[in-house]
Length: 130
Image 1: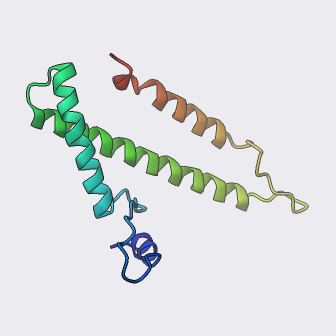
Image 2: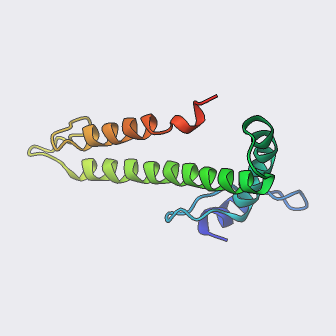
Image 3: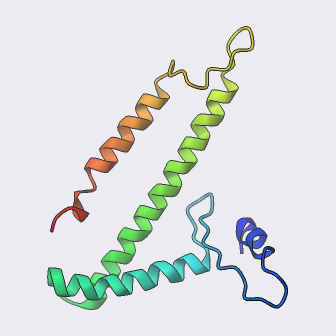
């Protein structure tokens, strides 16, 4: 149990069902509940994938979907972490006279982040094929 999961569990009233915590750690680790949810989705998707795409077996389809979902969730966590890192760097980049450059892109970080995001979106053609 990580710190976020432990904190979220404190919101359950005594005697009630605990809150279901879906958390991703700073290094991409999943909470147990998120791992179970992703595995359930992979199992459901495997049946559909086998029927529509003719996967050799349901287990192979489940494994492929599980890997892809973990990768997508991990990339979302990484992207979020990068945005926090860039925001912190901007907050520390205070120019002379005490003016913060929150919206400025003097060093190209925002442009780089946007380009990386769009390249990632273009490479996600696996789900567009029907």
